[in-house]
Length: 401
Image (cartoon, rainbow, N blue to C red; front, side, top):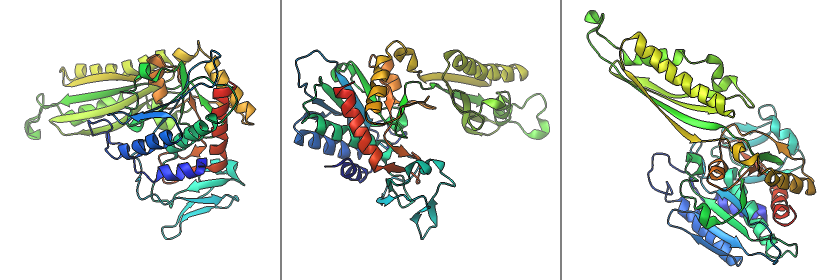
């Protein structure tokens, strides 16, 4: 089966995760794809199983007695809830530089005027949607590439050690690493195959935290409010105004971090504010958290009360802290891309991956490209030729390094 055929098969499974769910996986439908992958891996001759939490584990045995590292390859099965995931109507187009009409009836087009990245794909075959759903390349392209690489590794004469495979649920809601058994996996290091443009190698990500602020007000008739009313909604606005305006996502890029207001609602009696806090630099990250706490303290002091209470929780950290002493893992990926005719692109992730958490749990794990673009969008697409190249890159990582 080709990479393209596998990809088209996998995206037919709706696997959207659900942040409001407390189960694992968060949606039962993720089991359908997990079971499908388990059976396919067994058909290839691998030892594979799907555990009670929806994680798929498999192993490619070594074909040599020489001491070689145990390498892991990881991708996630769930898709984002940022866009509808069903019914996915995918088709293949040969991109010639003109706009791609995704949906004639709804006048939905994909063009370089809006998405300049398309310019890289002239003369290549793209898998697109009908403009009403996401495609699912994030991260079913990664799954298709890993399993296709496994098929090649099973028949190659090139030496490789034990290769571990894992496909995880709930990455899109930040839980993909929650029940990942690093000890059971048993790899010396691993790669998540969950990036975008071909050539991408990512070993730096944001340090991440969430800030939840609850404000208890005191309502009273506005005609008799002087010295008595504490307007929780107003305090929420004041707290937000005290934060640095230049540190919102719309004004940052590259290595610049941000404080992102994700929710603000309230009445006179009660209000809540939610932020996510991000920065690649640990000191700047801590400073941003302190800025939020300082704003809360300032407003409480102004109103001579303790109406606002903030809870800040760290989510994950920059995996560079782990990988900067183990850069051979990154160099292996760079060499393998070069051997496959791909120019490596080292870029920071303006987000996080399961690999960030796994790196701090003892499994160094940078992230690699898949050949997909416009993730979490109805304009998402994947390049057939680039997916095939990533299959070859993964084989090279496992055999040549």
